[in-house]
Structures are given as C-alpha cells and as structure tokens.
Length: 166
Image 1: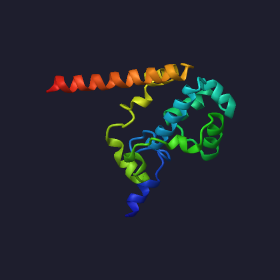
Image 2: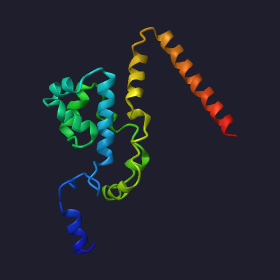
Image 3: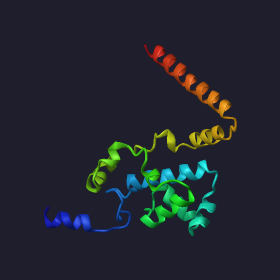
C-alpha cells in the first residue's frame, strides 16, 4: 500500500467516519444489527421510548441504532440482549452471506451495489405486524391452522404465477 492510500483510509471526513462505507452510508453490518433490534423490539410490542428508558437512552438514540446510523458498542449490545430477552448472537442471526463474508475494506467497496436490505421482507412493517398478529392467537391449534393456511396460500399463488409466466 502506498502512503497516498494510507492517507485515504485514515482520513476521517464528515460522513466517512469509522464504520461507514466509502460513500458515507452506514456499514451494512450495523444496518443488519439495527434491523434485528427493531424486529425484536416490535415483536415484544415495546416502543422505542420504553427500550431507551430501559437502557438509559433517548428514543432518538434507539432510532439511530435501529437505522444503523450509529454503531452499537459491545456493552450496549449486551444490555439490549438482556432487555430484549435474546442472546447477543440474535443480532447477527440471518445475516446475508455477502455481508458476513466481507472484510471491512471489501464492505466499503460493495457500497456501490444495491442495498440488500431494501428488498428484505423481514425489514417491512407489514411483516412485523403479521408476526405480532400471529402470536396474539393464543390457541396453539388455531395458530397452527393459520400457519398452514398461509403456507398453502403461498404455494398456490407461486404455482399460479409460474403457470401464468409460461
């Protein structure tokens, strides 16, 4: 690496802080962790304000964590895992291979590619509302029937779409 390259990597200009991609966007790992925080908080029916109070933050700071705009430190991640009643590993579960396999340098280079989180159904409010409604069904037999119904509807729709495209 030449001295000029070192200057570019070390240089810390506005929007390109530690953990940011080359174009100033949040690190994809931070976005994933934030999405997992939001997912668990929402599944528990907890507001950002309540979560913030439980760990000594404002709801604005919780928002920043959930968007990936701010990185979550190790001790804060531990606190979040306790309040949200999940193991720390939960925040890294289901991370796409293209993100977890990249080094920091490679993640900066991939920032020009489309954001893999934009089309992730797990990051949609509709998905979170559906999961919460599903778990409000207290009778396990009825809940299982709803699950099987939705699953079969998905299969039927997929088969119809395939037939229509041929």
